[in-house]
Every structure is written in structure tokens, then in C-alpha cells.
Image 1 (cartoon, rainbow, N blue to C red):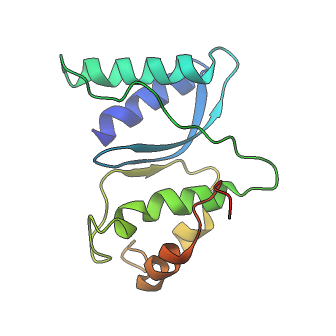
Image 2: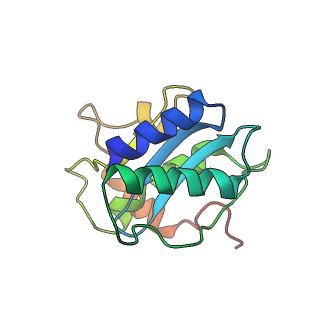
Image 3: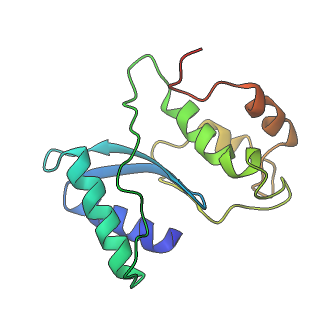
Length: 143
């Protein structure tokens, strides 16, 4: 699913619809960090991505929920914080342990997120990150 989804994000990028910074596919939701292009509204882009992925997996039934939640990252907010939250989501949700990699995560090389450089040599998160993330308010939510 990650490969299909990322292929469609790349296609949307080439069409000028968006630039994908990072994505994390979870069993029941999807974190997508993008810069929206000029051609489509966010609703139209999401409809296009959902339709293309659904066709690619040849599903005749519903794959996606009808709506989506969006949060526009403001200048004072950190794209890094949102990416870090999305990256840690499968670990915090206890879908995998810190000794495993989540196959649903992907990120572009630009910008290079600092937390990716701070990971252990094997590309896994530091165990302390999970405990810290459980105490944090998700980015974009009010305290």
C-alpha cells in the first residue's frame, strides 16, 4: 500500500498538484504532509489520491472514509514536529516495537528531517522517543 500511495503522490507532484514531504500509512488512517500546488484544492487532491490508490488496489468496496482532517501548518509551527509525530505514530500506538521498522513511513529527502539523522545506526527510533511522544500534545492540537 505504501508503494502504491507514494507512487500516486509522486504523480501528483509531477502534475503540479502537490509536493509530498512525508507520509505514514496506518491501519485506519493516513498522515500526509504536503505542500499544496496551484492546480487543485485540497479536497480535489485528496479525492484524486484516494481514487487512484483505490483503482490501483482494484478494490470495489470502500477503502477510505468520506472525509478527512486537515491542519495547515503555520509559520510558527514546525514541519519537523508534524513529521516526527507521524513517524512515531505506529510506535506510540503499539503496532510495532522500537526494534522494528514501520513499512508505512516514507519521506522526501528535502527537507531532511533532523530526527531521521538522530536515529540509531540501524534506522530505528530511540526508545526514549516513544515515552516522550506519549507525553506530548499532538502538533496542531490546543493545550
